[in-house]
Structure formats: C-alpha cells, structure tokens
Image 1: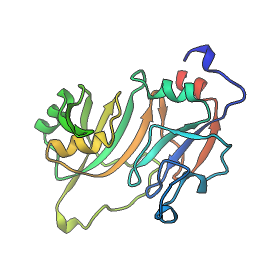
Image 2: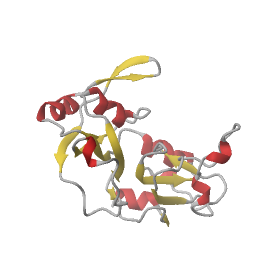
Image 3: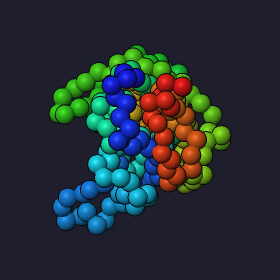
Image 4: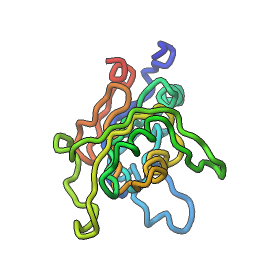
Length: 200
C-alpha cells in the first residue's frame, strides 16, 4: 500500500465474523434490538468501520479500521477476495465454467454481468477454523462446495452468482483477502498493522 496511508493514530483489526452478526456497529429503526452487532464481540475504538461487509448469514474473514484511506484501498480491485460456498446440489463443470466467465445478476435494479473470476469445485473444507454444522437435513438432497475468488464486490454478489447458475448458496465463508488467510476462530478479534499484513 501507499506510505501515506500509514497513520499511528489509526487502528486495524482482523475478525472472524460468526454467522448471525451484522457487519456494522449501529442499527437504526424499531428492530435494532433484534440484531447482533460487531461491538458485542470486542471493545473496539471509536470510529471503527467494517471493510467490505459480510451479510448476517455469512461468516469468515472481515477487516475493520478507523482509517478511511485503508478502507478505500482494500475495497479496490487490487485485492482478491476468496469465498468457500456450500451450494444446493452437486455443482457441475458447466456451472463452474459459467462462473469463471461471468454471469448476469441483478444490482441496484439493473442487470449486471460479473467480471471473469476464479472458480472451482472443492472438497468439504476440514482445515478451516469454521463451525462444524449442517445447513439442512440430508434428506433434502445433496450439497457441494466451491471456491470463488473475485476482485469486485457487489451487494450479495457471490450468492447471486451461484443462484444465477442454478446452485443457490446455503453457506458462505470468506477465507481470504489479498494474502491474508482465515486463521482465527469464530468471534476472535486480533489487532494488526493491516498494511504489513496485506503486503506480506
């Protein structure tokens, strides 16, 4: 990253966001008490913001910072974001090829074609510090896992992508941002120098 983004007054964190939490600190409206927020996991400094949100039902690697420049940098297309997705059904070679080439999804009321990305079938992940849980009863049919790596990040993009090729996402885990791999336990928070971490 650019040297000017370094600022000793700012704080940077890596979080393994558990399922069920919103990627934010404040919720307005009547239903705000029904939501679990990031501030319940750790006593973060004031001015903290999540860099690239994971929706409530998604889990995995999440960066947080008090530095808007760092947030802008990481959200750029410079850094890949890799996701492991468990989908409904046994995902096919054709579906993987479609994901790789780009698929049409809805975004802000319009049609949008995703950029080419990396996608592949993977075995059920057993080497990640993620919760071991079933997303549904096996009697409802088989499931399978895929790895999808993108550099863009539209709203619920990965979920929309798998649905577009006929395999709705049942579980989504972000496992990598740039060179940083998911290594912490669900709910675990560590403070880091994100700049050094990303450039490693």
